[in-house]
Image 1 (cartoon, rainbow, N blue to C red):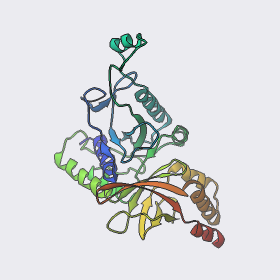
Image 2 (image 1 turned 90 degrees about the vertical axis):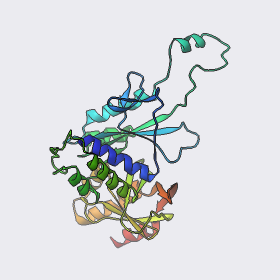
Image 3 (image 1 turned 90 degrees about the horizontal axis):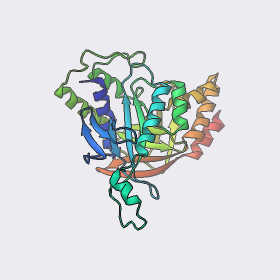
Image 4 (image 1 turned 135 degrees about the horizontal axis):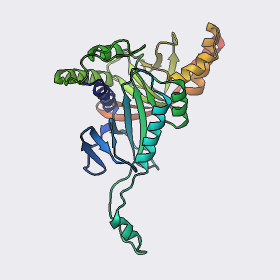
Length: 314
């Protein structure tokens, strides 16, 4: 199985288990082509690596869908790739079906209908990367609100890499000799792994617009109280979110990590900046998850009392 295909399966199955749903091809706007599922754009049709609908639509806004571009690069995703994804988002969101029939109808001042009656969506485009992102790529993505997804510090990552024969992904990822070899059994194993991971996962959107994947360490099902606390041990390790007697791990985005570490030269300063990071970037979250196979959305906030106590201890 190709490495890129395996990565797409992982990302897609995780999001489906969180509550997202597959977008079915309609044969016109979304259709199946040789590379896979395709989506029409203003200039050209594009291959859609992972195309999903969110569990809940935002009120007073166009219906939305999520397109995730999965990059199996052995190097970090750079600025040019993120620029290309921005262009992709613009191209598919500006698409409209216009032909000679539509143009002819538009000449009439007494139009009673439209030629093509299809539902329009706003597409958010995210990037998932095997090997991370360069600093310029992260800054550009943050400016244009392009979510950057990565899992390389999460507990399941080594198991996924071992399954696809990938080694050294944290330094210089190299492809195994399985690339290009279609293995039905391997696809089944990756699906099972992704489903087991997805059942422990929730997706959170922070007050700063960051997208976080919360991986449950404890308990038999996802639970979230109104408030949570955050803990960390080392900058290289995932942070911990504690809520409703449950503990979740999440990977702090590198862009936030850099702001945190750049302002810290001692252990005490690092602790102070970690508290500032919590207050500035992680004080509120909207969490998407499933409970008894039903999609749930919940607003949660940081425990300000514990945050105040942490400041007083320094």
